[in-house]
Amino acid sequence: MLRVDGVNRTFMLGDQPVRALRDINLRIDDGEYLSVMGPSGSGKSTLLNVLGLLDRPDSGRYFIDDVDTVSMSEERRARVRREKIGFVFQSYHLVGRLTAAENIELPMTLAGWSPARRREASASVIEKLGLTERARHLPEQLSGGQRQRVAIGRAIVMRPEVLLADEPTGNLDSRSGDDVVALLETLNADGITLLVVTHDIDLGRRARRRIRMVDGAVVEDVREDA
Amino acid sequence: MRAADLLHFCFQALWRNRFRSLMLLFSMSIGVGSVVILTGLGEGARQYVLGEFASLGKDVLVVLPGRKETTGGLPPLTGSAARDLTVEDALAIARLPGVARVAPMVVGTAEVAAGAYSRESVVVGTTNEFFDIRRVAIGAGRALPPGATDRAAVAIVGRNAVEDLFRGRRALGGKVRIANYRYRVIGVLGESGGAFGMNLSDTVVVPVASALSLFNIESLFRVIVEIRANADLDRVRERILTLMTARHDGEPDVTVISPDSLLSSFNDILVTLTLVVASIGGISLVVAGVLIMNVSLISVSQRTREIGLLKALGTTSTWIRVVFLTEAAMMAAAGALLGVTVGQAAMFAARRMYPQIAFGAPAWSIAAAVAIAVGTGLVFAWLPAGRASRLEPVKALTGR
Ligand SMILES: Nc1ncnc2c1ncn2[C@@H]1O[C@H](COP(=O)(O)OP(=O)(O)OP(=O)(O)O)[C@@H](O)[C@H]1O
Ligand SMILES: [Mg+2]
Image (cartoon, rainbow over all chains, first blue to last red; front, side):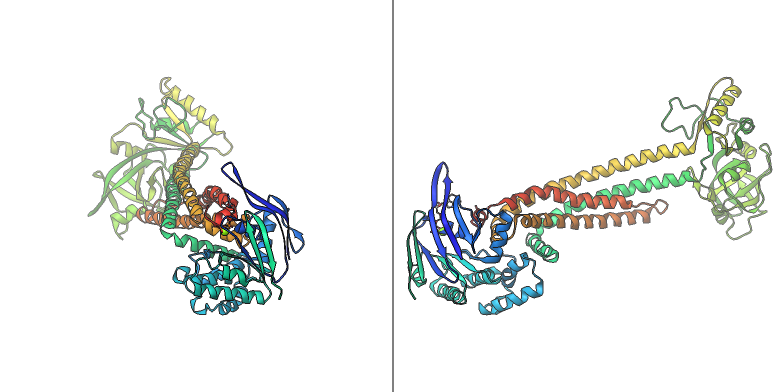
């Protein structure tokens, strides 16, 4: 469970302060499926980065499973990030010199897992993603949709509680986009908390809970009753 | 991250930029290789000189004709004296208290022949005391006639000279011609090393008086003085100087040196020389270090997004730093290994070319060169690695 209490984040653009997040209050329960929409520059990515512990709020509190993260040391935040959060980026962010399988295994490698354990965990993920034939290819040899699937594999291989996706279909044609969305929704159906930032209205509507941001503030938060 | 995974990860990164990595590796290996080669040459030269002097004992003084004006530095090994150093001088020194025995020496080269065979040889004129002082045994036959005044035409021949001149024929009792004077071979030298660049195996030893007339000279080349075990070296040196001054009309025109002190000053000079030369080689290590720093800085800025990703995947700043330091250390270590290999190969070749000199970098210098190389890599990569570790994840991910 994630809980955001009165979080603010202000950037300085030159000597001009930009309030990317204004007094955000959110509570996201385990297994929820949220979309975040809003005009460009409204603070969607900033919110996602704060939720993923990549960025620190200037004020306010942020709890993950009732533990305050704002006061944590950088090293602890890195550990929580590793254990509880998976990221999917618009531009995939794969490591070019590593194969698809190595990219998927990277978080486990960094966490010091043994090769056998890594292979076991990645094998099932690779199969689920339909990447078995591409496992030994380098990212440059893969299509955009395949790359994004590798990135998703990397995000989920350590079984995080929360999956944060920032415009995951932004660089994809509609067919690969649909594949990726279907995949993300399967993962959510399996219990992972899914938060998708998107400009795509159709994609945004698919989520059971929809948040709309304008100028750094949450202006709409609708739940679709099941 | 496991050590094997860390090395693999870093290797992949280095391999991605293999040209750049190889160039760095070469620059490191040049530094290490030059340190190994330079210390190897210096150490070889030092060992050679030490070996040459080592066969003279600690309790030995050498009297040379001619006066060295200033103290310190090297005395004239081949001085031209104003006054002769005579056999009588040597005998007078032998009577001084504290002196065990003396060996007057005349040294020259001459054509030595036996039958159809001949060779250029060092001819040493001396007395039997010489063999005792130098601890060389007569291998076969007998010693020189006793005393220093006998001009007998007899010779004791070193082993190599026997081989060259007699070629399997019996040398003892045979005849050799030294500069057309006939000498009878009365002895063959036993095993011996070299001293003052002279290998006794190649020499022919004759009575000192014979040598003086053979070379038609008056002055001895030097007098070797062995002092008694309980005598004080410096006191004996003073007595010799006083005696020689008195014998030479009040002119202190001889030099008395102790090979031991000579040896240690030689040693000091050569060690210093080796260190100086090695640190010049070490400068190229620093150059390689600066290269590592620049390349690491480029690498960090090229891989900003990767660093951001690693952080997003939960890698701590410490580990980011470790990754970049490991990359630098791997390159430095590989370069050092290559440098040591090349240096050792060069030393091997040098030993093949000059077998009498034991060229070879001492273990400490190899260890130091490798340690300094890896240390340099780490020190110069510290700043870039720190920069990488401090990157803010969000900015790094967007490449800002
Ligand atoms: N590192 C930064 N330095 C300065 N300003 C920043 C920084 N990051 C974000 N901003 C500003 O904060 C505001 C919100 O940015 P954010 O990236 O969260 O918007 P967004 O909703 O994700 O936009 P888009 O839909 O274009 O991705 C913008 O005005 C942006 O210029
Ligand atoms: Mg954005």
